Length: 226
Image (cartoon, rainbow, N blue to C red; front, side):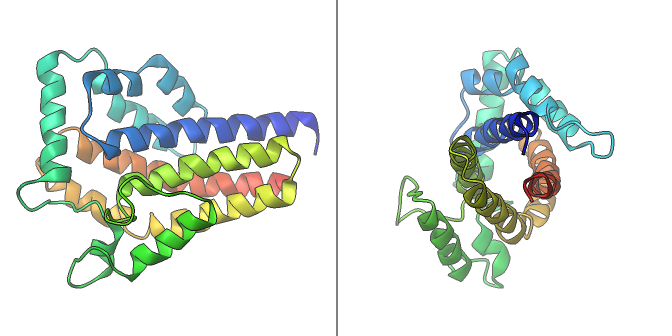
């Protein structure tokens, strides 16, 4: 593989790592005004624009979802924070539960078999989420965090010239996204649409489209590494 292609793959991996870190920040805790401003910053927009495509509008949709977070006043930031509390913490029943297990069982219960499968993925890459073992591993914020972290692993393997291991990591990312993200993110997004939220339903839909595009991008990178 020539140096130009290595540089392209490095840029794509770094960009993916950054974008999935945004997903983790937005979904993983009550948002602060500073975090929302960072997510909508010019740096974030430029990172997302790496994945802009004439054939796919996922990147533009994600930028559009984040732009309302730019220039927030305290009242607007508080509204987004309250929306997060209602959609992710309660105390009322959550209109769009953020766990894979809920969408895999008729009982819509957490701590199910699918969560244990995800835990085995995490263990393969030495990822021990905060709150383990009492917090469900299949929370949406942990799934996107896993992709962020494995992008870091992929970058290390690219830097070391370990192309076989790099291909393994990319194949693992693709399998994880297909089996543990895209298998329920669309239904989660539909539930979000009925939640009366303003920011998070739009963001969730854009993120789902971005993950679907990411699977295609991984295929393209694997093709270059063949």
